[in-house]
Figure (spheres, rainbow, N blue to C red):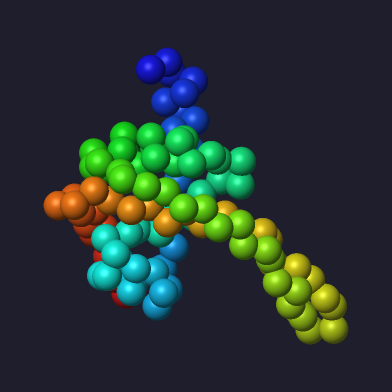
Length: 102
């Protein structure tokens, strides 16, 4: 694996996406949900997760979320579009996110 592709892999996953729906997907379907770069493909996402977390991925589903129009005082604005990846882990595989909770 060349250095350029390894740098690309490190930049594909932006953050875990946390919501009630993603918590349910984690419990019921052994899936983890990430916000990813908008130009990332399914094979790139799979390779990035396998490289960073040292787990086996059995599938990736991708959702392009369109930003919503919101009002900021008297001005209208738009939230940014983003892409989510639902990553299904192979049976017996887990990813533990550890960190400080406020």
